[in-house]
Length: 85
Image (cartoon, rainbow, N blue to C red; front, side):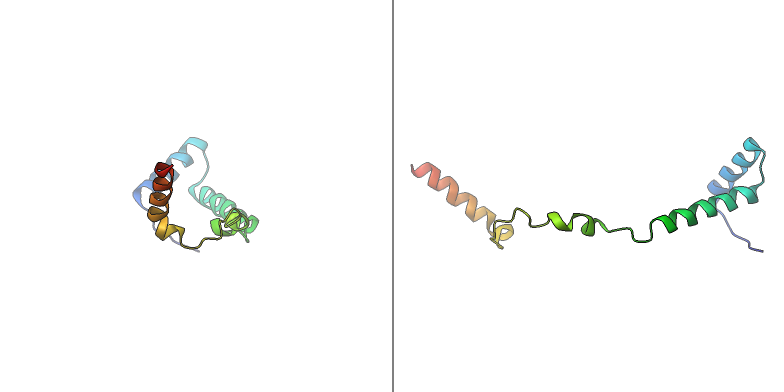
């Protein structure tokens, strides 16, 4: 036997579904847990966002590792070179 505490919102939702569909609150909770466990089993090796995009990171790299810190200088150089012509 298991007892749980629910916040008022969850309890209200369960009560509403129970009355609307004429099924017990226990059945609603059992079905929800079964669905949750099934979902977890289907995605045991869910990849992180980094793992999903890993093959694309650096794919079009310039080879210049300091661009994130020197971009303002590089931009000024390009503007000055364009204006010099």
